[in-house]
Image 1 (tube, rainbow, N blue to C red):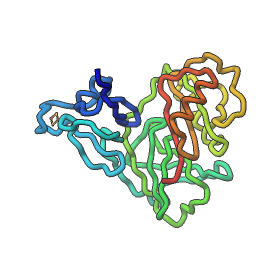
Image 2 (tube, helix red, strand yellow):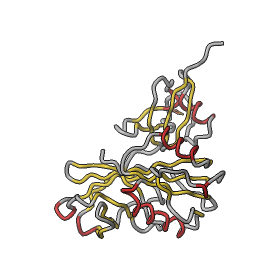
Image 3 (cartoon, helix red, strand yellow):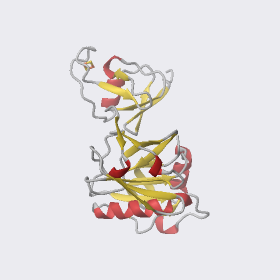
Length: 250
Ligand code: FES
């Protein structure tokens, strides 16, 4: 029997492996994704998904997969924040803390795209409440001279409060990871009582054979899936859902 090549589809930051030439909607539904749909004939448009980068819409019921796709189920909403609509506080020598009043609310760990002048990047919601958006930006960005443009990516991310979580970070993001861990505790999510170093020289014996629902990997640069898997394997940790929260400038 001939092997069918597989194609990785990322929807709202969850990865699915579909067979090449499989129907996108059917393939994702079959693997547990929740996608609105109705006519299956390209008429009602309820099955629309969006390219995560270009925001171009695509009818999933009419798409056969051939190349990897990164999609979101809702288009981004974009906002400009005037300087008096957010508070800024130093977090460390690398990061400043933004606490903003926005027209939208975010779940803890939900991603936000930001743009400040010509520079843009990615952050995530660090607050456990829904009243403000809190995230960290590199401290060398002068926020007093510019309007902060925010995009709510609306990736459907919601944390199960009965979950167990582990927080892993690189050296640069240690203070953010600690703040994030406090927000997990506020939400009642059981997290490890320390954050773990992504680049630790030795495996952590205390993690041996532990199982977590979420691993939050908080990193200033993009981390490859392979190196995360390697880290988990070295530490003999099992995780249902690794979630990457990177701060890399784009
Ligand atoms: S389900 Fe109606 S257009 Fe796809």
